[in-house]
Length: 327
Image 1 (cartoon, rainbow, N blue to C red):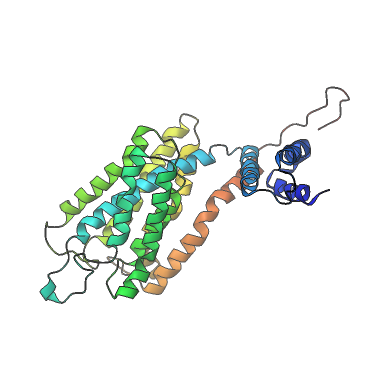
Image 2: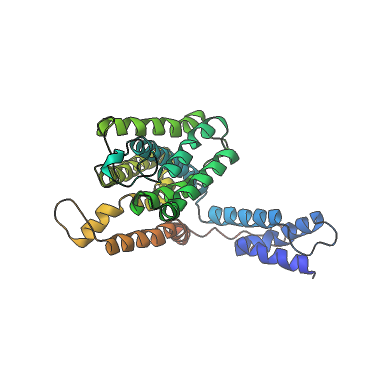
């Protein structure tokens, strides 16, 4: 056995055992026939293709074929939520304190968060005219810009949005990277409509032209409201699609639990601290709550797949039509 064949067989472990027994030799043989002379390792494209195929077969075996479409549906909702928040924050970034107040600011803006919001507001235009790889690339840039805001704040000595506003934005963006390459027109237009809605909401909730800072009304109330709305929409989609025997909505709701939880970190941590009235949790409690959500949230989908597979009835054994042996 050559080194190349051995490495292909290792990658083949991504497939379920029964599938490997039935078609493993055929799959590896096909890749070996297509490999160039002298190749000793599978190409990155071949490795990714084998892993993708293995995951698809495992999901099919678990009866979770709607998982990938459900995650793509969740990605559309996550992207719309992220652009709504970016539109809201961007309007308020344009309302810095007067210079003679002596309040720190970032040039003509309230904080360095404007770097992230500008990045996010470029996504809706591309989502409408160039969905797929261009939209995912700009979304990835927006996620990186959001993650870089604390570093820029330290380097420039300028104020920044609170971490409990930045972290859920990153989580929404990570999920939005799974958006479909060819979404329908309503899905392409939704991020732009959400950004416009966020900007309009900012004008409604604050006086036009007045100073708006991160410590004022907006952050603590808006984030849980956005998370609750996102969860309600996901649940309604899950129920509506389930009535049509479509499991995408349920998987989408599960995929959105992590960003929804991060959007609600402030009230959740306040409830843990047991404070009365408006929750003002301590920083260690907020940090611990966010870490728990960030660690446990991504495990929900694979755990659900495992539980679903264990509850799925075993397929009846098949007999060979020639000799009658069980397969």
